[in-house]
Amino acid sequence: MTEPGIDAAGTLAEPLRRRLYQYVVDQGGDVTRADAAEAVGERRSLVAFHLDKLVEVGLLEVTRRKVSGREGPGSGRPAKLYRRADRQLSVQLPPRDYETAARVLAEAIERLGADSALHSAAWEEGARMARALEDRPEDLDGLMALLERLGYEPVREDPTVGGPVRLRNCPFHVLARDFPAVTCGMNLELLRGLLSGIADLSTHMAPSPERCCVAISKNKNC
Amino acid sequence: MTEHHLAQLNVAIPNHPMDDPRMAGFTEMLDPINALADSSPGFVWRFRSEGSNDATTERPFGPDLLINLSVWESLEALWNFTYRSEHLDLLRRRREWFQHMEEVHTVLWWLPATRLPSLDEAGERLAHLRAHGPTAHAFTFRTSFAPPSHGTTRPSPIRP
Image (cartoon, rainbow over all chains, first blue to last red):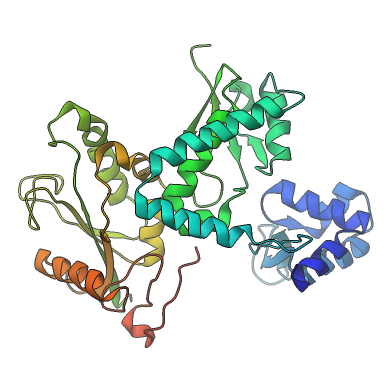
């Protein structure tokens, strides 16, 4: 376990900080102090203190930008905006290092060209996870809750047409950066396996720089 | 402004002749993916055979070896197109159409922004990478180097 990891976990033990962190993460972009204060129903100065604490331990990042659209003299100082930090913090007891193992295995898969074995193994793992669930999701709402638990941070892009569901967080982000084809292909098949029992949903690749490369849609012919 | 551009050469051995129906999944994607590359941020140039929209008829390095040669403004620009666009889906399905190659099949290098790479030069860079591993002369995404103007030959792992 790393010192920054301990500090960050300790910082989140304070309930208000945890709510603030969750709020900023849920917004998926820059958040002002005023928005955060309103969301948690606390004084702005108190909220600012806790937000800056979260920045201090590396959980949030700050950017400065004028938010009102006003320009020129008298438009005020640029506001302090908060967003989730890009860096990754891990707390594992006792210490574990699955990331190094994953990198070595990914490299081996590339050297072997073993993509199809990887894809079928990933699909089977997804299906196994689905079978192990006590409450299997039967609709899109149930699926959203499951994906949330798995760390994908799902959002409905256009709820009126039943999707697509975009995944804001890639649980394999660090690995995907160094082994994109292997990791994203594995992730797609993992999700396909997981969704295999939910008939009217399909998954496809929809890569973008900001989020997980997989999107989930309702099948049009259902 | 940008003194150097990034060139990339990729070689691949198709599982079947390009006009084989089993290659259709790949060949049907060629035009849309090339169009996507052309309109991607930071795209500079890609090699096309004379009278063609792509390089699939070109075989400068052997009768079986398909090539793909392009130039980009930065490493990030090429990375985002390769791994964070619809192109990624082609990569994911690469084993359906292309043989696995034991040897390195993609090489990157910096070249002055005032010129474009030749096929000979591209072949030489790939040979250099295969013989010496990643260096400032010829490198890979995973072990990349800053452009010469930055005055360093230290590996600079890309962190998009």
